[in-house]
Image 1 (cartoon, one colour):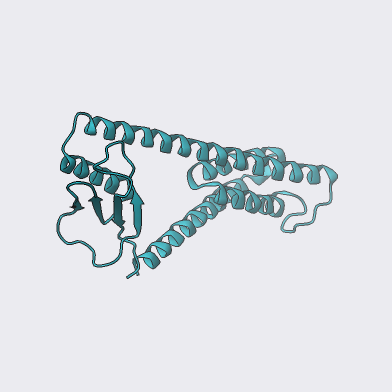
Image 2 (cartoon, rainbow, N blue to C red):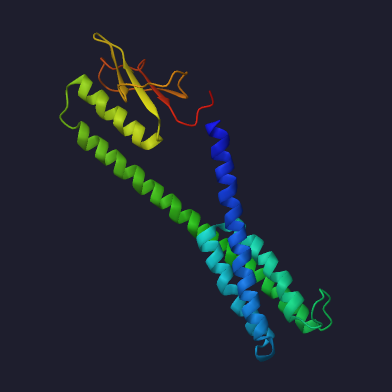
Length: 216
């Protein structure tokens, strides 16, 4: 049930992004339409590129490409003579339309790739920060229970899990649960082996994590 709700929420979020992109294009089109007689066709094409870059930067590559195609059609329909039709009579207008479509798509792709690269760099930075925090927290610890508690907290923060159970095997096996009460009554979604240098933890230990979006 929770997984279905999350998928529905994601679909609504993506749909709202496309609607917002279309709304911005419609607003810009309305403003340019009122100034159509005072603006040159080439200037209108250049002004259309501004909202396209903003849409891709803030809403993503999908809305950016879709907005580029939509803008191409509105530009042809409202600003290329004869108006209110998709036919083009002058060769120069054909060239302008083709160049506008190519530039709009290229700008959307470049901005989209920049956003993806920036997100990847931020993810690597967060990963490095978490690893540093974990190594700092574990430095000098020799108590298995304290180590298990820190590992469980770090795993729960990273995975956003509803519950985490760390099972340690060895001479004195034990388990640590986070939270200690109200464990979910279902199998874990993830079971991850942990390999460490110390034999008391061993390669057979398991990390169990159940997240809130499990389907029961």
